[in-house]
Structures are given as C-alpha cells and as structure tokens.
Length: 164
Image (cartoon, rainbow, N blue to C red; front, side):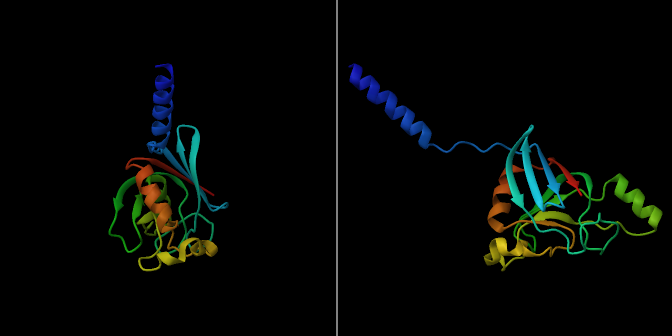
C-alpha cells in the first residue's frame, strides 16, 4: 500500500507539472525608445521584454501628424484590430490631453493611430530582421510571433508608458 501511495503521489506531481500554467496578464507596458525595448509588467515584476522597431522619424517625441515619430507619455491600450494591415494591432490611446494641447499651441494636427503591431501583412517571414531599422510611421513593431503573445498578455485598458 505504501508503494502504491508513493507511485500515486509521483504520478500526480508529474502530471501537474506537465499541464500548461496560465500566463500572467500584464498590468502595464513600458516602452524605452532609446533602448528599443518594450517591457510587460505584472505588478512590479517584468514578465516579458521585447526588442522593438519604432517610428522612422528618429527618437524625438511625436509632435504632429506625419512626422513618423513615436510619441512619449502615458497612454493605454484602448482597442485592438485583428484585421489591421499589419499582423494584429493594439491601439495606443495617443493623443492624450498633453499631446492635444501641445499640438493646439503649435497649430498642428497631433496625428493618431499609434499601435503596437506585428509586421506588415505578407512580410511576417522577415521575423526579427525587421528590427534592423526603425520603419514604422510612429508605431511600436514586434514580430508576428511576439504580437500573438502580447495579444494574449495585454488586455484592453492596460496602461502604456512610452519614455525617451
């Protein structure tokens, strides 16, 4: 009987370790433009880090429509688009009030449609090579495999901070 219990316990331990564990959901996203990194946090713990491509306009903060710059500030994921021209896209709530006021003072349109997205549809085979240059219109780009993971980890409403 003792041997049977030991085998049973070992079997339970083995089977439970083979079951997939649910992934922690991100409670915030931090983008570090200079480092070309995006970190997903659960509480104060980094659960995932990605290398990203940014806007082709350089590392300055977005000022206006068409400048091809990635914004800086506090935003949130406010919707998602699985039928984007890029492989999946999470919309970032740019422009916020600060961005709108700056654009008003400059007399320009602040722009919009800033996303965290995969690679242009049909070019997913590029994989991580896409990160060799900043190529977006101001968005934050990852590989298609990475956006699949981010899509599951980052719920709508998640805060996004984009730093220089």
